[in-house]
Image 1: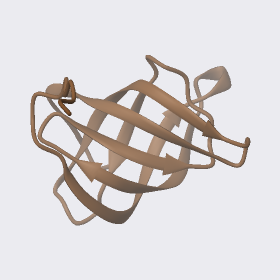
Image 2: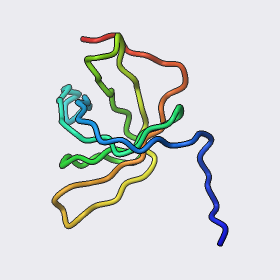
Image 3: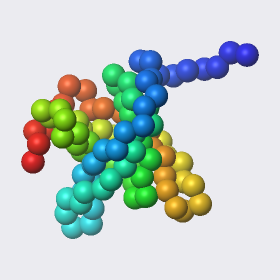
Image 4: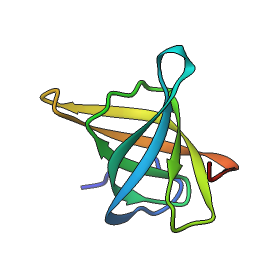
Length: 99
């Protein structure tokens, strides 16, 4: 059986805790915790309890690295309103300094 894989880069399955920042109502920056389930050169899949919208940009922070990454939500899946899984695409070559 053949699958139609649309990704440009191979995904690496991982489980890692991460923090991300999102603009919420009134343009306030709010931090959230999440788990990364897989990552590639062009994107990342994460699981969190916070609701995000398709097309929303978030800032992914990994304090082990010297920079953070800006990413756009491309798809989402809700699990009984308890948590969500999101596919995000990294914004090309854009890195955000730690705040």
